[in-house]
Image (cartoon, rainbow, N blue to C red; front, top):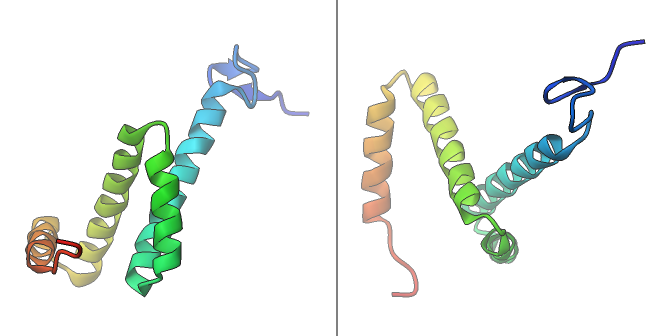
Length: 107
């Protein structure tokens, strides 16, 4: 039988499912919520957008929410650059241009 491993080695101080694993799980779930928000925005699903935005705004660690958004954007840009055979800088330039030119709602 394999020995359980924790964040610091075999059954370390936090054990197999200690605080480090709990934080990792929270970060992964936060990233999933961000992906669902992006998907809802793409589908123009206002109810899902409102619900997901409320969840993310209520998150007790906004810095990690912003980090999750940055991870999502970076991952998308890398994938798009590879698929389109373009540089990542070109993808970000186009993204910035599109965001600047997009209508700003509620203003």
